[in-house]
Image 1 (cartoon, rainbow, N blue to C red):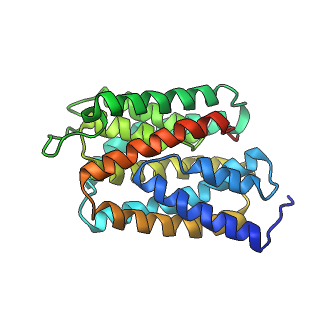
Image 2 (cartoon, one colour):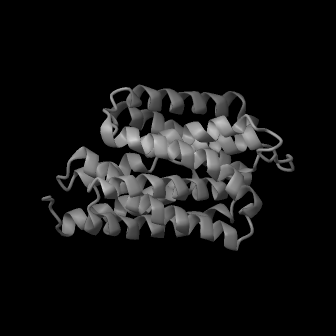
Length: 258
């Protein structure tokens, strides 16, 4: 499959990767930048969507490791949280590989607007106050439905899934934003691996641009973890709100790529 690699396009991939990796690790929506960067190379939309998962997977593993090294990853919650997320990702990835995505743009926009309004009117729903007790899925089994939905969406189209995972983990299980982002990275890595396996089987992944993009996303993830652990929860909350608001605008122009 033909695509163009030049100093300009490689630089664009790296810059988009750094910004996308930083944003995805701290909040979500970075694929609204990285997928268009891949399209800029001239590859088809379905291939761009599939190739983007290489960078997302490596960025997610990097972010999860960074949070774990700083004791913000609840390792005991990983497996219970992963089960509904990965089941949803498999369903979403199969849809992504075989079906059109004309309905995803209004879903994406509606999700972003709803989350922005919730954060503005009821901020404690998505950003629990410091000291709030967190719950396991055994305590709040209804959160499994939110994680399954996040997996379906993430397997289908990556853009904005971080916001949905934050809503499920912080809103449903009441984790603070640092621990929410740590678990979010694990979930993203898991369902991205499932989705990537489907796309590889379908022959839709271009490895050279995917790994170039990944070099940027990994760098962005490293910077984002360092930033997150050195600022207040309130700062992260308002940055999340700003990113959600920007994503609302981006969703107006974003064309989901499947």
